[in-house]
Each structure stands twice: as structure tokens, then as C-alpha cells.
Length: 202
Image (cartoon, rainbow, N blue to C red):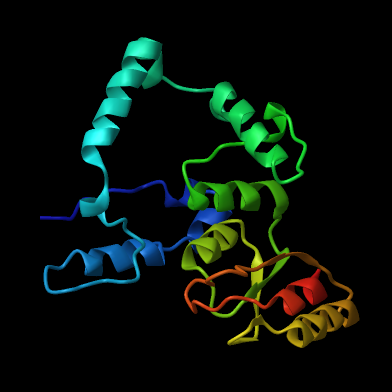
């Protein structure tokens, strides 16, 4: 009996699809799901600490105030009312913004995907700490970017390493599209960049 080919259309895929691989995060979660594993790497919330009674009351109140609209879709940028409220919060930090300036995402991963789609063309160079958050690497690689890692130590990203990388790119006649850094509790290293280094990098 001959086998059945489930996908006869690989020749029609966009070229960027051929470089895609399973997300490292997805592979991590499959290992973390084993009962004998206590994973500290996946980023799952501790659900036992969630205030379920209060959340239930909030959900009931929301449905009574907004009705079925609460279960539908929002505009692509997110709820206008929430974006307007967030503008008030930003103003407390001296940031003036309008609701049109904000885009709400379902989480950091969607934000990284939007960042990559908006700013990266194939072959663009992204500078990032090494190692860095695998979800960011996945988003940048899906955009076919060239990620170059920078050194860090217990005080975070080393500015001299950034300067050396920028100088090397200039000698090649190239530029980095942007620097991706996690200055506070860097993932996965857990280090926090000092104020002095933050100022130097800026």
C-alpha cells in the first residue's frame, strides 16, 4: 500500500516558510507538561494565586454593564475606552498620547511579531543580547532578520561590545535596524542593566 502525501503544495509556499521551525517555546512547553518536571522556564502564571471569586464578580459586572458586546471583537488597536484610560496613566509619567497612538496586544509575543512585521525586511540586522528571549528570536527569524548577539555580564549589556558591533557593521557598509535589549530582569539571564549603562547605551 502506497503512502499518502498530506501536503502536495510545498512548492507553492512562500520562500520565508521554508526557514520556519517549531518554536523553541512550544518544544519547552511539551517538556514542561510532563508530570515529573517542575519547569521554571515556561512563564506560566501560578493559577492557584488567581483571585477567581473576584474575577467572577468582575466578569458578571462587565456583562451586566456592557452586555454581549463584551464577548465580541474590538477594533484592531484594542478597546477605545481602554486606550483612552491608558493615556491618562501615561500622562502621570509625563507622556502625552492619544488613543490613536496606542496599540493593545494580547501579550509580549504579539507585540514582538508586530515589531518584526513593521520594521524588518529580509536580511536586516538586529543586535540583541546573547542569550536572549527565544520568543523574540522566533519573531525576528520569521521576518528573515540576521540576529547578531552582543556580550553581557552581571550588569547587563556591555556598551563596549555594542560599540564594537556597530563599528564592524559600519566597516561592512551596513547598519543595524535596531537593538533589542531586555534591561530589567533579562530573559533568560535574569540580570538587570545598571543605570550608568542604560545612559551610555542611549
